[in-house]
Amino acid sequence: MNSNPILRNAIRFIVLVLVQILIMKQIVIDLGPFAAEGFVYPLFILLLPVRTTREMQMLLAFSIGIIIDAFYDSYGLHAFASVMIAALRPIWLQRLEPRGGFPPNSSPTRQRLKSGPFYQYVAVFMGIHLIFYYLMMSFSIFLFLSILIKTLLSFIISMIFIFILMSIFDPED
Amino acid sequence: MLNLFQLLLARFGPVLTFLFLEGFSLFLIVRTNESQSKIFWSSANIVTGSIYQVVSGVRGYSDLKGQNRLLAEEIAKIRTQLAPSFYDNSLQSDTVSQRVDSTRLQRYTFVHAEIEKNSITTVNNMIAINRGSLQGIKPEMGVISSDGVVGIVRKVTKHYALVMSILHSQSKISASIKGSNFFGTLVWTGQDVRYLELQDIPKHTKIKVGQMVETSGFSTYFPAGIIIGKVEAVDLPSGESNYRIKVKLNMNMSSIRHVYVVNNLHQEELKQLEQDDKDE
Image 1 (cartoon, rainbow over the protein chains, first blue to last red):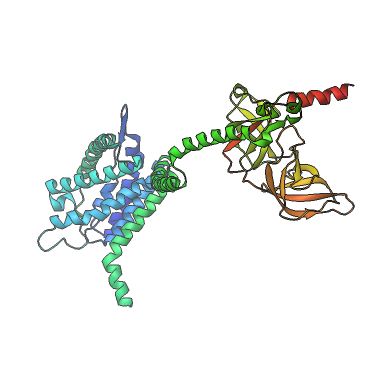
Image 2: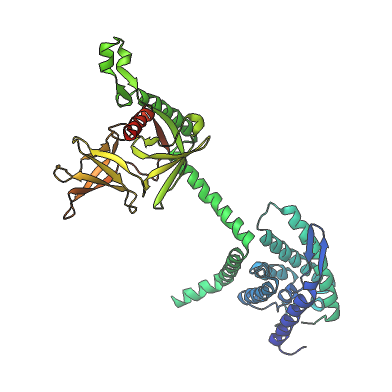
């Protein structure tokens, strides 16, 4: 897996999209008024090489978002949330940058950041992603409580599966 | 110049990409998802709505509506007392009674009504008004507005009446050119809602563009002398002995709100007379 960073990310893109639509789409937690589902595909955006240009990050985030949208019949919702976290990600990563900067083509993985900061980073951006996703879905701030509950449910499911995935693959970059 | 462009792109590239992609996503969301699009447009309507509110505030205060109704009812009362609304009873009074009042017998009364439903788009336009049999409205009563003739009552329910608009292919109104004694029939040709056609005026009368057209008073529906419109054009088709006169309506049929139903107190009597004549 230490070969070409483009190939590596392309494979990650495909695998995460497949996991999302073949596995995650089948898992819907239904609690009466609050049904929620988990999302693992944002991991692709979060694991993009740190030095990728911001425009490229957003474009890639948009493309994975719009593909997920196509499968979820929710044109624009995932794309919107994905571009949002791609745009905000560098701000958070600046704080985590080691002395001397990240090596070229390196991704902010668990191995590189250590478990604590890595899951903190993933949790923050999964939270942002889900809040924007549900906010755009209801398209109103007046349903704040229901958005919050849905985000929370979805967040828990997503984090569990992201944890499982990271335990299985645990890439270095 | 190119350097500046590159500098701008380097500086604002991420922001522009972000705005473009999020804008496009938002466009997709609003366009494809029904509930979002409803909410989006209704929020947009809050903006346009407040503009409309200002506009309507200027055009007509909401409490002015009630005032308008009061005024209109007042006018109905006053019309009832106007000269053309009376039947000239002077001959009788000369011989029988010296009472001034009895020189004028009430002939027409007016009931104020508001238009509930109006159409001008079809060939047979009908108007619904908010007065019915409870207010004494009966079929065959004329309906006028402050600017002209509106139509004739066709059907009546308890609270509402259906009026055949003058913009109806069956509508025939007896009308005359003001200042001449000739009268004709006013019909709608079904095309332009601003114009009627006055037919049956013989060609030996002199007609000028701009002359007023008014109700003749020869029908039982309307009092005489209600201004309907102006002569817009005069046409004499070859081989015919009558003019075809294009009459521009005095009022805008699409914007009328208040109308008056004409109650001809002598209608029954006149009809009876005609009936008796036929029977003989």
